[in-house]
Length: 177
Image 1 (cartoon, one colour):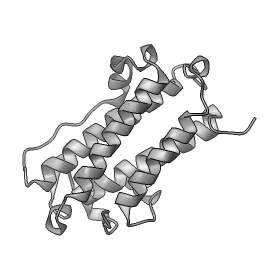
Image 2 (cartoon, rainbow, N blue to C red; image 1 turned 90 degrees about the vertical axis):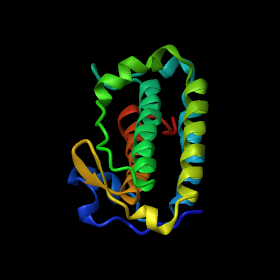
Image 3 (cartoon, helix red, strand yellow; image 1 turned 90 degrees about the horizontal axis):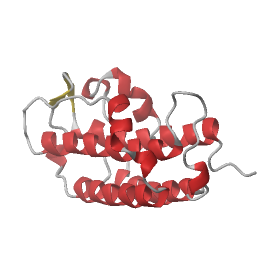
Image 4 (cartoon, helix red, strand yellow; image 1 turned 135 degrees about the horizontal axis):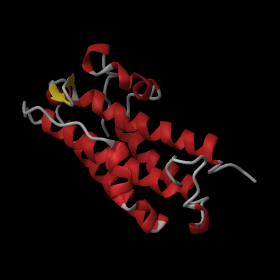
């Protein structure tokens, strides 16, 4: 499993500091694996009838949050892989507000979305576990800003924690009734 030092402030855009701060651990391979169980557990408390719930007008449904987690992880790990491999091509940003409705998550089952998330996360773990020490500190450009694979791995981990907490606090998902 990958033990990765926390990225320094110059390795990422300050926008991502919140996600990185949510990850005090350095054994990201282990944490990423544990998050599969945590994500299964929290979404396992939601039945299909409640998976379309939105806590306010214009907010994502529970299904859309899970779809967003999967899409964002794909984008972040694609960036991580490119930069770790030494690719200096500037990588584009992505507009999560456009991706969510285009994903069609609300037309899918929660179980199907969860299976997709687990598959993507498993691929993330394999990628993270296979990188060399040198690869973690390479620098690249994503969305017009310098970033490292190390920062991206922490962002993936913290991004999930952020959204699972939002599901608990704003959607009531995973709360005992």
